[in-house]
Amino acid sequence: MNFQEVVNGAKAAIARRVVGQEEMVHGLLMALIAGGHILLEGVPGIAKTLAVKTLADVTGLLFKRIQFTPDLLPADLTGTLVWEQSTGVFSVRKGPIFANVILADEINRAPAKVQSALLEAMEESQVTIGETSYRLPEPFFVLATQNPIEHEGTYSLPEAELDRFLMKFVVKYPTPDEEVKILYLVADKKEAQELPCVLNTAVLKMLRNAVENVYVDERIAAYMVSIAGATRPAKTTREKEGVYKYVSFGASPRASIALFRCSRIHALFDGRSFVTPDDVKAVAVPVLRHRIALSYEATADGLDADAVVSRILSLVPVP
Image (cartoon, rainbow, N blue to C red; front, side, top):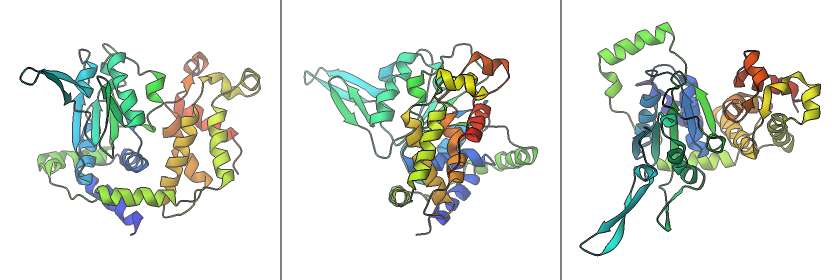
């Protein structure tokens, strides 16, 4: 099987509904193959939800959308025990989280206790209802969206939950040419057209097996660890290197694991059976941007997480 053709075919099918947003689509496919979860940040109306629905269509996976609101309860996600009067026992009523592709829409509108209901599901692919744990369908893929411009009635995601997202993508506005295409796509109602299931479960399994055969040299693996470690400066290094004053605390070992997994998939997408430093650099920003906490100095100097990660990449020696 030509894996490049499979991936390009999936991208072409998605492009029939979603105009542009190549970086987001590339990341969605990468995370799906990696078995990770994605956080999408962007203003309303730029095809975040449409892209997730379209991904579910081209994969043929069971899709559920959960609209996060301030009055949502954890049981509304995971399910609950229901008393059956006729039998005199409790029965389990499973929630919408029991699906393959979960769209957690506007996740930052729900309080912490609801967001925490996702922690076990995202990390262990299971949900505990009452005293029993239930396995979630395989594959299990969470795509969460949040609006960066509205802060009233929203709750910041805790670091423990952010760390469970494989990557975070900042979805941008379309270009003028792309927006013209969107007008005709909507006018002709092509955004509702049927799409072929080009990335079914069997193909997805073969892609995952192929990723495991992508070779990673020990020096490349050490490079990944060095990048993740460079986001955790000690007080002495913070005084020596100007970039470290912008970081309050850095990424956990989950970041190194994410770099390892995503770099292999990036190499496979490029038709290679081995990982290069360029593969690591290509995935470093979406892997790390949500895993580092910026200091007041970064805010004062007008730097965001992407700029800090780019500076760190320039400091770490390339093998």
